[in-house]
Length: 599
Image (cartoon, rainbow, N blue to C red; front, top):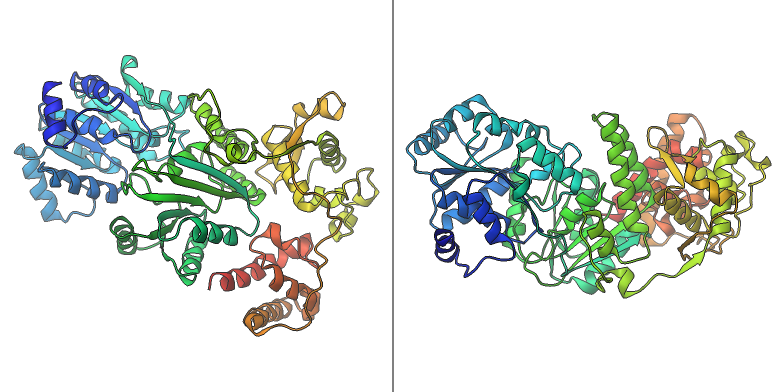
């Protein structure tokens, strides 16, 4: 450890180790196969870089992203170390030159992608030289149930087989107990050398809001709180990334898109600008951010709900690495749950994998819907704890109101049962509110005893109730179909009148769809959207061989202009839009509106 402290002081410029860093470094130097779970910004890199330099031989770092390798190598080279990366960006000549340097013993630390490491050529090369250690960065990728599953990581069991005497250290900021066990099993890590350093990022303020025109919610947050700040905005789809970045640019922000569908040069250029310039906002899918070292990211915003608490924690952890105050804000809605459920159901994983994904999604939704301290719940998920509420999340700062919702919940569960447990929330809500639409009449649901018993609640209030019923396990969602709702065994005591439930209070009295008078005249500002909506309607009418008014009336198009729906849940609120038209024509009109919203 004397030599380790010398390297810490003189190579990296720190006077002492932080928290458990010293114990971890000591374990790795002594040859222990070690697991390290440490919050983002906690100094994980030093836990393998220093032992790699103290122990005899070359250190191998397995890293999932080329950009991350390049940043780390540049940083180490700036410290005067001989570091390099071996990946697909190297030409044949450059790769051969690097291999000669490796064999000659002229490299201190080598970064390798997992798919490159497992190749026979790489294994043969590394067996020719003395190795100090293997460091597996972002090790949560190893676990089949991890939130960022990557098959090449699962083949890293080659390390204990081919290099049994070279110590292995696995590092991650995000791993629940099951993921930790999976990592330790795959890499054959020592039970007495596992360090879980806590998960609390006290400088991050967690805020979660229901979607209510999320574009305006995000804009208000940026203009009122984050003027000229660097930040990340996460979206679920590549198209939404592109649209959101363009819209933010038109709102005066320097916003750049980043997703896997872009060419490598554009992604690299945008990442470089984010890392090097001030006030840049990156709008990205989850393809962006792993290992990003920019310290002064002041906010992370999610325009769609992440698929798990692991993903949420990992992504929000990119804010405030410098220890200064930062904000993580999330906007979520029922459509996120349905979309993520369908993605999990359609994944290539086996049934067990899909069940685990669904459990993770339920836990994430539970974090969104809860009324108590979010940080306590977040830490509890990772088997960490906090004795008192944090005082730095939205529920602590402004505690939500709750109400006795037992009677409403009983109505909701009864209606799910009466409709045969084979419809989604949209239709069940229509029955509860007494809607007279084609689908209700088709199944004769206007004759049910639950028809119209929920007229006193708005559609939004019912959506909130159904979300929370799913979170609390009273309802299950059939992800393989169309989000059909099914009762669970847990719902029986409520239906029998044996249990009462309190839910987050929502403004609830609204007996009809929006009844505001739509202007007869279209002002000049909205004329382009009006013309595009009519052109869309005309095209659909031609394709279907019907008059345009059969598609949607003028009044419906005008209401679309007023309320600018951006997703199916919002479009169904527009007068004249029923389930069938939503299914047949909704996406075409939503695309038109989105193009104008982000133009």
